Amino acid sequence: MNIIRTDHVLEVPLDHDDPAGETIAVYAREVVAPGGGDKPWLVFLQGGPGSASPRPLGRDSWIDRALDDYRVLLLDQRGTGRSARVSRHSVARRGGPEAQAGYLAHFRADSIVRDAERFRRHLLGDAQWTVLGQSFGGFCAVTYLSFAPEALREVLITGGLPGLHARAEDVYRRTYPRVAAKNAAHYARYPEDVAAVRAIAGHLREHDVRLPGGAPLTVEAFQTLGLALGSSTGSHELHYLTEDAFEAPGVLSDAFVAQVHHRISYATNPVFPLLHESIYGQGDGATAWAAHRQRGAHPEFDALATDAPVYFTGEMTYPWEFANDPALTPLREAAELLAERGNWPRLYDPEVLARNEVPVAAAVYYDDMYVDRELSLATAETIRGARVWVTNEFEHDALRVSSRPVLDRLIALARGEA
Image (cartoon, rainbow, N blue to C red):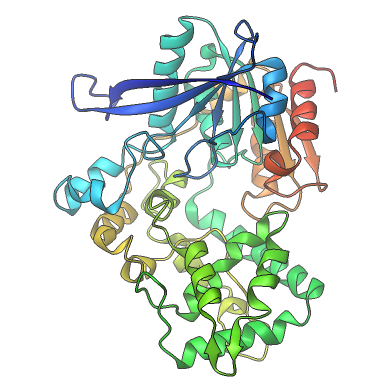
């Protein structure tokens, strides 16, 4: 079905605490069904960090259901899409590593929420709107609820209730066992993959294999394909990718290497490795490559050390990626400075959340590989009046693949109808 799209661009402060300083352009796309211009607004906060908002072809995915009740604003969060996109080229123009890191420090959830507030006032004046946050977008929604609850009519969150006090090392201490469980489930589903994956890892250990961009395809880089295991189709995709990796004995096919490059290169999203751990930073010390440090406590991820299956890693970033990936190499020193930064502003206000009066509905996926269930449920207990739907029917990408039942349930929960 047809939709009406309208572009919006606002100049906002790079640093909202310095409104007279440098500005950046932030973009959002308004999407409305024909005749739906009088519906209430909903702003969508995408998962990530570092992913642009959807580019709809029509009433596709969750947008179809949302347009039944809302006019939708698809915000390209700063650093993504058409909003001051971060790349090795754009960051290099900032100057040296210190200037680069200082610039990137303004691309977290607190700045994203203040950008959204600029759009709300621009489009709605003093009226309220609904927030729909997916994954990292849900983290942003809780930041919004902490610092500008007066702006919000409803808050809908899918797979994105953050731990309010969890440090990065706490998160990864919990994450590695969940990723290990997803690996075990994958090999139980496809037992033939145990030998296939070991053969690929063994070949990479013994040979210098290069990706199309020139980066070395190391065993550790190959293991990062496990990021897909938390999605509804990821296990199947990983199986089909690895089942015919060799075109001849001892020869990895060009098709396999090209597909791996497409999946693990950060050329399209350098914000993720640059700032992913910073989403857990709240003035409680440096994140200091927490995923890398925690990995040593989980020897099951030490590929080929034993005869056990080779385990893939998940939603982790590692310092060696900035030495290998051409899209990241120029940003290596800035990444180190961000990892060493310990004075990140707080992102959540538990006292405000405990007094909350905004209807909040959240889907918590019981087996979510990316967001810890127990941390999410503890946060739900803190947010006064939050209604939570805990389900094992779906994976983390349920909003995309099962959008209507998920949104139906959340909207009904927010309105006290379920």
